[in-house]
Image (cartoon, rainbow, N blue to C red; front, side, top):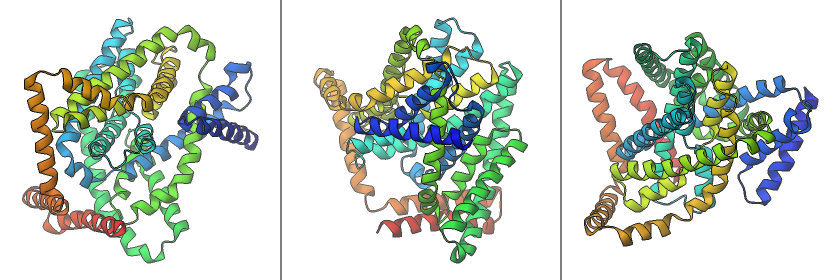
Length: 455
């Protein structure tokens, strides 16, 4: 086992360093490292695949836990319309497009459904890294884009649960699916509400005794406890990790936990991507290159179209909407996880996995270059647009600027107004005043702590 870990780490380290020097995402380096140590390139197993797969599964949990830690209700409130309409348009549009591609390729319903799920999620990690490397972290469109990515991550976790259920029964039943969605929704609400009521209060009580060591141990214990709870309830372990990340995101120690988790997440996430690379047969890439190119074009064009339309319909300016769409032109970690799930359950065609991974690599590589074309494409669109569309674009720009000026000093008041509405509604319907106050206090104190830290 130590020998396997040594081979993985040294290979991944050297290859990722090379990719870093070439200014390419290190994720691609991990996948290439997996190809190098996998059984398909040299015809023999350099490492034990079962050990790597076990570590990779742990890596998935840590990645989803950390994604949950980035979830903020406040951010969703601030860009709610853009996030909801944008995410719904992208996910819905890409699901239909992906399913249509599967039918066009003469795949059965199960394969088409899995393919659609693989194509509908952009990579949060890759998008945010590309935005950061392009120097656009403070750009106006980033807040809306981040909120859309968060919602996509939530939907991806839900899709994992639903696809697992459908694959196990090997059937697609509408009534059964709706029932599963209902049970999942209720379960998520109960877990999240109970978690927000209990865990932030508990951590606040013991905060004086929490050094870095005890905090990371406690956080991992809570994460794994929720993982086991999810498995006992019949859901995926990934759901449990994600939910606990969401709960801990509303504590005063959220950013500290993120910082402490980063090295652990990076190590196991690297192992996961290496395990993805180990499943790729280089000869199959040559065999399926037309399909890889076709799927990549579908991803790029679909994400640009649906991303731009969704954000425009959600109230963003055309330039910001296009900036979001042009940055979402890849698939990533969730596509790998869904592809691995289909392969593990034996319900997807073996050809789909290498095609999806190769398409992800190609679109990830192209993302920074496509992002650079946003402004020229916007200028071209504006120049050749009809007078009616130009008027709408200009009017939207003025509306957004006026809205920004109006709320620039009142974002906290806006969030608290939402909280007051929630408090008033829930007091009358579900629980007592004391419970609701505790729930909102836990979230509000976390927001105040974050703002204090920023100052």
